Length: 209
Image 1 (cartoon, rainbow, N blue to C red):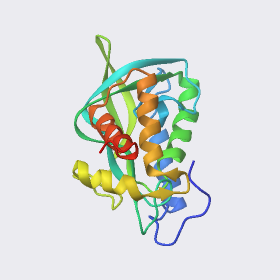
Image 2 (image 1 turned 30 degrees about the vertical axis):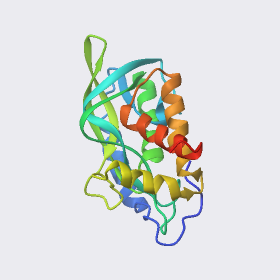
Image 3 (image 1 turned 60 degrees about the vertical axis):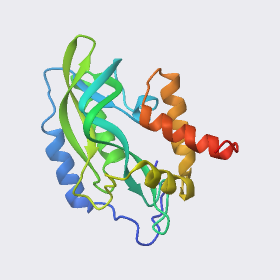
Image 4 (image 1 turned 30 degrees about the horizontal axis):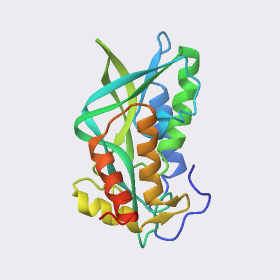
């Protein structure tokens, strides 16, 4: 949940009128005669927050889970920005797909829009997820590379430097990383890049680096 007060110079929220217009346009594209699937890759995996009737392991090809979004509120400040997860182009991402019935889809996407589109750094898309031997069309939110919050292209040391020192309204950035990796472990999802970051941070803190 975003904190209620924005610090000075934080990335501004989308204009309410623009945000509502964009949301209405998206909701108008939802199917009314079939189920909708939503792909989750971060906190949606363990905290989807919307009603659904099924959840299955899935792989999204062409996108990968990455610390590619600057955070000025949630896990950082304007002076010491942190990093949070987004889907960035390339590779693949192991996550979950959640199935909503037609009578649930509108409420689910309305909720997800409000959750993800505070500043507009994410972009809603339709993509094909691999679920077992099948491909399923799903909705998800990916990082908008044209947005000033986009932090793609950072190398591992740059990511670590930001995560080590950043703290926001929701707590230290390192906690966000460690908690995410622990949740992924509980779900049996391996993400080599994130696991490497967590191992380095934990080794440093235990005096092993």
